[in-house]
Length: 132
Image 1 (spheres, one colour):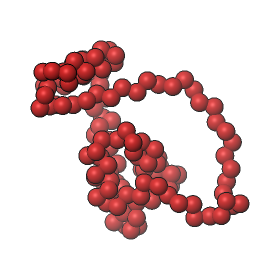
Image 2 (image 1 turned 120 degrees about the horizontal axis):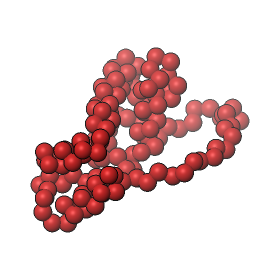
Image 3 (image 1 turned 90 degrees about the vertical axis):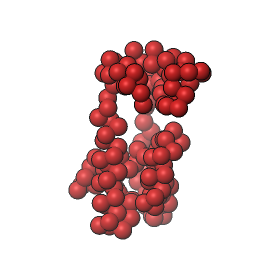
Image 4 (image 1 turned 90 degrees about the horizontal axis):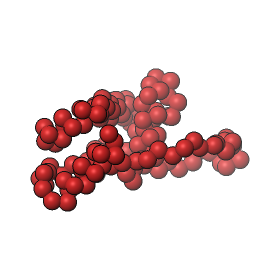
């Protein structure tokens, strides 16, 4: 990413820590797999609640996740879809939930090679304007 784009994102208080957290959680998952032999961290893992929630979130965001992140998870044999181990009669039925207002998702494309030229630049600027 160019310094120009980094400065623009810094000017609106972009949360870089979020990006750093992904790498930290991925390393925790690698360690978990080394110890347990699999990547199926329980959602409410007592040893690391944050990791369990993160793993569940990765499964739910696979379709919008960057190819790089998907490849990293695939490289450690991440299981994207869990199959039920218990018969349906034993599964816990959850009450329906009420969803709050939907947040608008904005994807910032980083096309470094095409950075300040052409359609990629206008699209990036357009998304940036929506954030600020």
